[in-house]
Amino acid sequence: MSKALGTALVGGGTGFIGSHLCNALKSQGYGVTVISRMPGPQRMTWNDLNRVGLPEGTTAVINLAGQNVLDMKQRWNAGFKQNVFNSRVNTTSSLAKAISNAQNKPSVFVSISGVGIYKADKVREYDEASVEPEFDFFSRLCHEWEKAAKLPKGPTRQVTIRSGVVLGRNGGMIKQLYLPFFCGLGGPVMPGDQYLPWIHIEDLTGLILFALKNDKVEGTLNGVAPQNVTNKEFSDAFAKALRRPAFFPVPKFVLNVLLSEERANMLTEGQKVLPKRTMSLGFQYKYPDIASACQQVVTKE
Ligand SMILES: NC(=O)c1ccc[n+]([C@@H]2O[C@H](COP(=O)([O-])OP(=O)(O)OC[C@H]3O[C@@H](n4cnc5c(N)ncnc54)[C@H](OP(=O)(O)O)[C@@H]3O)[C@@H](O)[C@H]2O)c1
Image 1 (tube, rainbow, N blue to C red):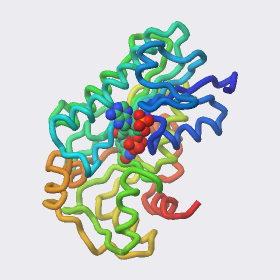
Image 2: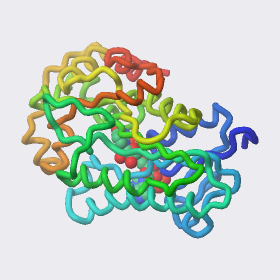
Image 3: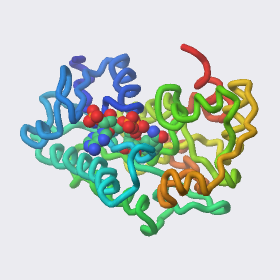
Image 4: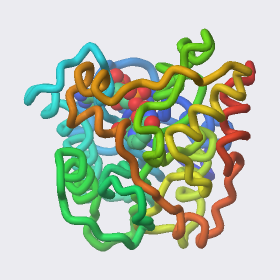
């Protein structure tokens, strides 16, 4: 563990975003402890956290835990929705509670939320100041998730990142799309003109590090790239990066059948989200446009 930076405690640090973040934290000199449902070296479980609180020397806490919503093997029923909800809200409130109870408090708590807090619309533009009352399951989830992360006034800065779809080779949406697009069988989700708020994985982890390191960063940030694209524009860019066509649109009714309509709406509808505060605080994107992000994603490392 670096004496200067201390330990970063990462809920969901075994996942797609979490493992990427843990590598970035280690390369910056942080010690890293992951909270996982599975015990292991350099890990603690959620039960350990509830029992003993934050590990000694924790200077930063980040929560990236959450049951995969788009897991096709899981039926969209009340039980699964409860898992989706609890895996985000309960883990976040456990961390907030552990921070409140800690004698030596960390300097920063970053937790993730989603752009599902904004209602899908083809015209409206949302920035971090946009206030939207709850309107469906996902918006209620985001509201409760963000509420769970709130801390009483104290020395710990609290930052919420409302992330768009995260683009990276080894997880999330790209993992599902890579094979069909690689085989030339890719195409947009219909109708195609719905917005797809997105961010490259390196920019999301970069934004989390930016929030850890900058004392002036507090409150809500939109974790999306500055270039807004539609689903069709994303599909075209991804297919182009792979040098394949994007001829095969995915009809809305197919996703409604496969995922059920409430969940399929995450793909068949979209929001135009601007990272206004993120940019005004001085965050610099490595991949601000979809072409460069898709190019990086298809490049073998
Ligand atoms: N990927 C995206 O495009 C995207 C976009 C917006 C927001 N987000 C949010 O960012 C977070 C991380 O996303 P990701 O793509 O990295 O997801 P991921 O790869 O599925 O990883 C999520 C992590 O959450 C933990 N987890 C899963 N089910 C859980 C449960 N029932 N209870 C407690 N922990 C559980 C798992 O850790 P263990 O198995 O080790 O316990 C896993 O490592 C999620 O909350 C997600 O909603 C993701």
